[in-house]
Length: 150
Image 1 (cartoon, helix red, strand yellow):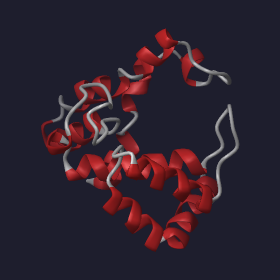
Image 2 (cartoon, rainbow, N blue to C red):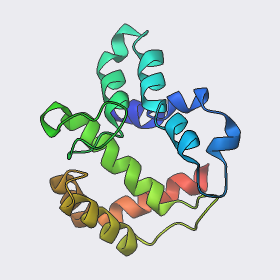
Image 3 (cartoon, helix red, strand yellow):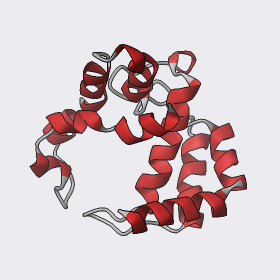
Image 4 (spheres, rainbow, N blue to C red):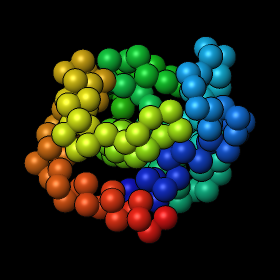
């Protein structure tokens, strides 16, 4: 289920114009407001498949943060499932490691610094960040292999 959730977590971006998704510069407030709707759209698509109810829930929460400042619903820590927290941390790790139109990917060490700061700020689950730290070389190799095979 986590594998499928990982593949489908950004499905809702199909509802976001490509000009926004691939924009090389900083997004406007209006553009970012559109981006923040993608977890909702992903949930609405996946909830149509009965067997994907749990995955749909994780997808809908993958941009929520433990301090209740995430999106789309600003859920509090106790409302964010462990599955969603795992998808969130994995998504952030990959997003930081990968090249983006507006920046080069970070090293594993730089990625862990950013993620540790996010955990200290109560944005993401510190236990999961520690798990990544303990397994960083193995995880980085998986990310590299994924990138090479795409």
